[in-house]
Length: 235
Image 1 (cartoon, rainbow, N blue to C red):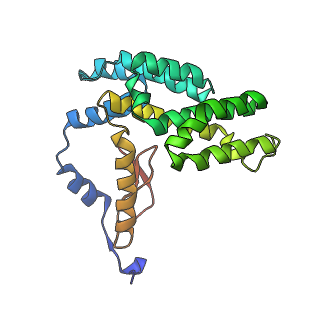
Image 2 (cartoon, one colour):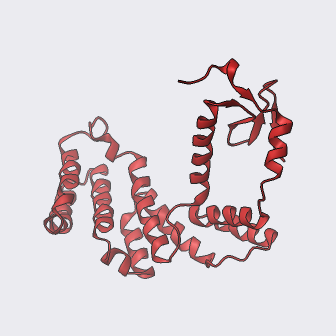
Image 3 (cartoon, rainbow, N blue to C red):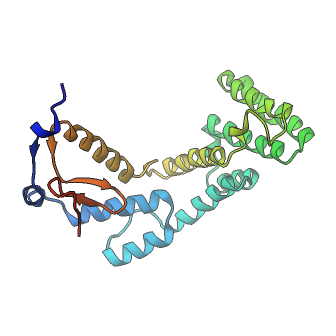
């Protein structure tokens, strides 16, 4: 049973900060965490500047970030053909060894044809390029059937409008970005968001047991004093 707020132990700001100061955190580890995020998310200029300012040497060719981001941007703007060509120029094995990813890129191209009202081209493309994938991988057929159903509706009022939303392009771009990272032996996801999720989960667990200086705003990273409710900036 969850204890009431009045019966919880309260940890003061002074005590909390004293305990936190005893936790050894190497600046180099924090720098690596930031660099990991910048590289994985594709912030090339920021990564280069941070490398110069921190003196941190990355084991990743920062120029490769630009190539990866150009491919990602191509998918985000719906230019799937350009994205596929760039991937094959960079490393043709990526699509050859990942049939699901290849299928999803082709499927996104089909969606773009339907979006532009090029129904005949869409039908021909589905038959020539996507149907063979479905025969080899039957588990993908359902996605193809759902996409083909777009042809039965006006794109502006379609009940399958989620396929036409930018978020679907983003989903495909993220899948391709993860494959590009894996092909270059890099993590598919940055570490920082996972750590923030862990922080949020840990605070929820603590909320049931004690009153303590809590971070309520992840963006500003401020602690709220449990006694006064005042926010204390973390320098």
